[in-house]
Image 1 (cartoon, rainbow, N blue to C red):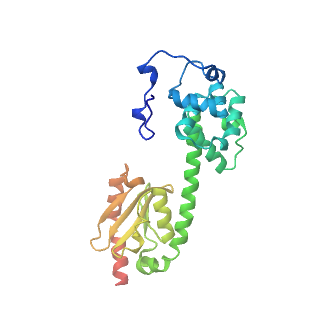
Image 2 (spheres, rainbow, N blue to C red):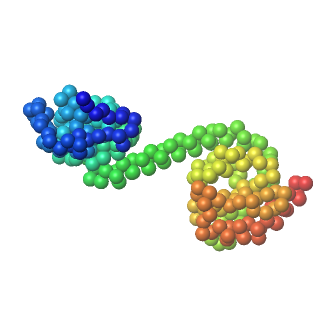
Image 3 (cartoon, rainbow, N blue to C red):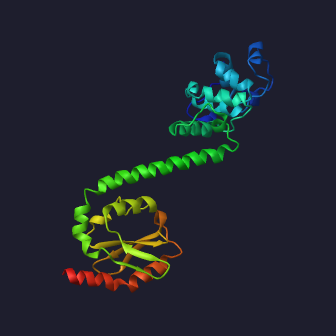
Length: 270
């Protein structure tokens, strides 16, 4: 009789050593690299793997325990990574986190890097190297999304110009902060992407009674401002991810003190 594991819930896995401490091992498991330590792997999983899978046996003998655990836990196609793993083994590099290392390899492939080079597959700081490539991929996705949004924006430029063209050119500064009206839907796309808020995705450029301005310092976006064209008051002013910045109150005060510029344009077009 055997206590079997629950494939869905690891919490119910039972390590026999905890319930029956006496152990004897057949010669084959010793031959295939087992030296008495399970390395946080269930005995059944470990023995089955090293007796039937030469790559699992190699990982155990090479001391690549984290990668072996990851391999047995998720049963992915290790053949896709084996050449890179052999480079690690050959260079005496221990993969500290199998999941993170696999992610890094996929990112390296995406950017056309040589995954047979120790320079890339054996990083001194796996966390830092992984995060570097993730950030690079995120920036690439942002650029792609911006290009797609700008293409989409072209469909609405004429309508936006009809609605808000009379306000184009409005700009003011207090010497540090510079605030101006967004003058194209493409600028909305860029503003929404860089600031990570919904000024683009929620189509603020089509809101008849709202005027959107951007506050910057030396060309760096600080907050995006919505002004009501009914009340001539600031509805909201949002920084990155809709957070207020240290300049929030100053931005609102600067817009309020220059609201007459918006009123004048409204009167001229009436």
